[in-house]
Length: 273
Image (cartoon, rainbow, N blue to C red):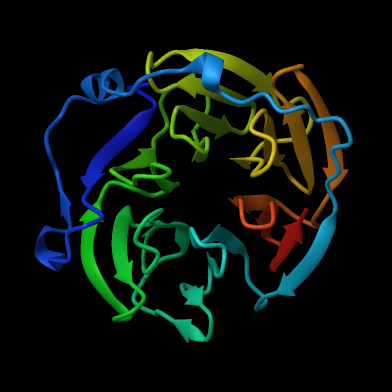
């Protein structure tokens, strides 16, 4: 797993100084994982009896590919970004990128902060209250994700750990597990041990994105070419749901209301529950 993650940076959610907002602590990645307590017995395995998953809303964007979306931690806002080179927040837009925006993520504690990365391998850290970029750094292109709850670490995906390029990663709600996705395979990793503990082959539906279901911790929602794969990890069973007219490039979830958002190259963002 330490080979699969290209970069993990320490993020101080209480530091208001933009110059020192993000600092590299130089820690070895393997050592970082060693500090996280694993509690597999405490990892909830809710019953999926009566589980239902259906579209509840659709937002049609500009005539361009949507490559990223994410909820704020309070569930009040949904940001989307794409090949029009704008991350969007309500009625505001930032045009500072010279290449397509690939991924964005809100900080779990400081809801006014989020980061996004582009195809030039740049990560921008954004303050919504000030509507200004607080810092830029290198190291993320395909995906960036803050550790849930505390937001102490920021993970960025690389092309290691799979036989094909890793194009998506997501944390579970407690930050104990990390899922990584390549076109042919999804892997579930234990953060404490750094080992892959479960796999799912894509078969004929090429994988592009994934997210843990906000209400069922043992269900992973996986975005394919035009359909969603819902994988019950506890029973190792999956079901396929038609969703979009093109690649499902990004997935996001909000525990507020149990909503899942899907972003697609067909130019739409859909809400599911």
